[in-house]
Length: 296
Image 1 (cartoon, rainbow, N blue to C red):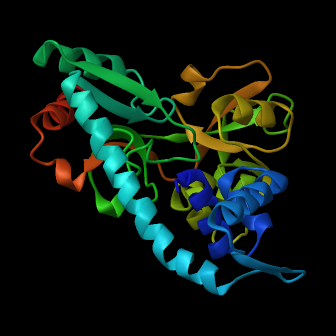
Image 2: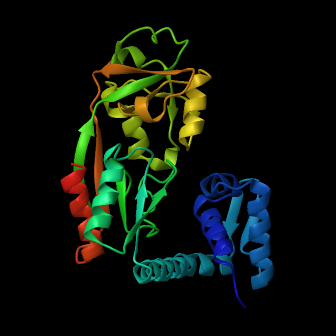
């Protein structure tokens, strides 16, 4: 009997969260869709995996057995899939490069051009990631190397070289009372609602909320967004303000949104990251050297 790995991932999420509501949020699916997937898995296995009650979902005996084995099964499958994709890229002479919006700014085209010059016949396949994935696919093995904003979750398990830093500014709706100012002190923004990245991005979200630079003041979140267009729209509609790298004023100009210098907040750092096991990969190493020499 074959079981879709998607069904196993759904099962693991529900087992770990103890219910459908939080598991659905974690998986970005609707609750009815997730419930349907769990029932489908139970039909395939021929046994109930959960006992349902108003308090939540409790694993049955067979459910506990599967909950013990499923994470390892998924981890092995993910590892095999990563290695297969990596081998395919090498066979096609393609280096998979993840990046977040504007990560290396104007340096990115120069880095890619220098890599192409040094590695004739190779192509850097640039893959932009959503803000819900601050490692741009690197932790999941979807890319070989990535240009990222620091810090990000899982950074300690990777090799990271910082390339440069740049000041952070604040993005506001054009009609905001502070928009007429050329420079704003960060403490003047402490009570403002902020447009934030998804909660699961952890320290990356906290950095862009400057959570550690508020002298204990709690953060007010006015909206949560995952993509630049959503972020700009939330700011333009007045749902909140947001810290951004200074270069955002060049890359994300939009009617209704203004960018202003902000004092009293640390800069944004940009780095190149790659897996611990990739130190000996000459192609990855070449791209990293290009980043350090051209983008630093």
